Amino acid sequence: MNSIPIREMIKNAVGDLGGKASYKQIIEWITTKYGDVNHNTIKTQTMACSVNRTSRVHLPECGKPRGFDSRYDFLYQTESGQVELYDPQKHGSWEIKEQDGKARIAHNGKIISSSDEDEFYFVEKDFESFTGVKEDHANLFSKFKDLESILKNNLGDSFKDSNSNVGNYWKRGKKNTYKNFQWLGFDRKNTSGHNIFQVSINSPVNLSVMIWIDSSSKNEFKELVSEKINGNHVKFIELLKTLPPFYYIGIQKRDEKPNEIQVGDGISSEFIETIKNNFEKNDHHFYIASHKSTLLNRLHVHLISKCEELMKQGLLKSYVLHAENSSSIRGKLLMQHQMLNDAMLKPKFFCEFDELEYDSNENRVILQALTIVERTSDNVDVRMKAMDLAQKLSGVVEKTTISGPERQRMMQSYSRQNLRYRDIHLVCEQIIQESGIEDIYKGDDSYVVPVFYDMNELFETFVQNIFKINRKGVETQYSEKAWAGKGDLGPRRMKPDITIWEQTSTGKVCKQIIDVKYKIKDISSGDLYQLGFYMHEFEKRNPNEESISHAFAITPDFDNAGSGSYTSLTGKKVFVKRIDVKDCLEIIKSQDMDKWNKLEEKASKWIEPII
Image (cartoon, rainbow, N blue to C red):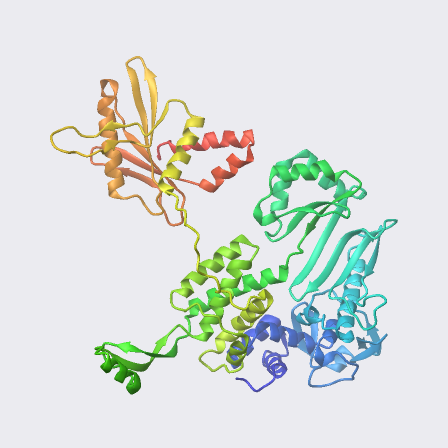
């Protein structure tokens, strides 16, 4: 563990880097010099030690009025993400003064408003303000007042017809009772408190941002949205799909429950029709919101990123104590248990021994947090990624719940071997605490009857139906007996998945042979021999033995799965085509005739020879 304060590390870093440095350079220098130090802590401390950063007053070191203090006042921010060593002769005098009971930054005796600063962001302390202590609630209220000023000063005419208001942090009429939320709203003038834009913090993980648009909004943005909804559903849906997957969109009748969907769950034409039918009504409004634990979603993503990074570096192995019967002596023999073995004539040695393995508390905590993310995240992609990592980890780590006190003891006693686990454990701890689930593994036993689908059969039917709809002369599973002769030749029949026929003057001619293969890897030589046999046999059955020079193998598109052509010694060719199943399903679900025409074009290209 490093005994030197992080602010001293930062001071040494900037001095060694020539008196000027970026946040990135400071972090790299400290990591090289002192090892693994939390990057966010470095950034926060750099801000706290920058004399001209107005937001430093929200941190403990700078939360009270004071003059110059060399311990904390040694940097000056020259531009975003860039600092240099503070020089009073060059940068002037900076101190912290009190104004209206609040700490404020002052330059040469003049108090600087936070609205004079280009940047604004919430820090971790803001999300821990609902403590019931007046000063904590007042701090967040002050932060929202700063945000109000910055929005009004920097958004120009965007809210020119609006009033703004920051909600009181205390409950009216109740002494020493404070609210567990804080909000800032912009209300349209001459309306009764109807927000068109709102920012709020409701809990340690929930930052909400909402944009409201209703029929009384006569601005250009409302007219643009109305035009998109009424003019082109498809383009409007594509516009909404550009939002993050955890965002919500909805239509709400005033004072009633909203009708909303999450972007990640898909946006249907029926939902857009609901918006269209109600958007122009005076008592309805349309909204876009990120009001479902967006910070928790970020924690989930951060955990996945940290876990992937850790697995690349290699998991920690620790010595784990085992006491069990063994066929040979390992470690030390426990005589009391061994006497029981001898009495029962059991030919085993009861031994106690240490074994180096991955199943340690450090890794169990990570698996516990990943399991929580897998089961509670409202983002499908995050859930799937967490499940994949949890499955990998559960192969070498036991699913055992580590209690809060055990986690705290572990996080207070890092060594050089496990220090790299500190950051990921902090993320795990936040996720586990916020979930409120004491034992995530309780009730893991499942009695649901599993349902298995034959993907080979499903994929064959899917491709067959596309060809049936878009082409003439298509026959599926055309069946003839493959062999004739003595003995039991079994029920096997010659059945290509798809054949395309054409009626000519000489009779019915097989023109194309297609075999559908649900394979995630390259096709095998057996598949090629099968298609070669089909070509040979159907060519012999064609009138005048009309030649079939090639056949097609259609398979789903997977990563690292190849396509191309294969040629036999007699010149017969097999073309392997990979199809994008997801793209086809999107076209089918859209019920858009223009897109259906594109599907017909796709199906035609699937049976075009590769030149």
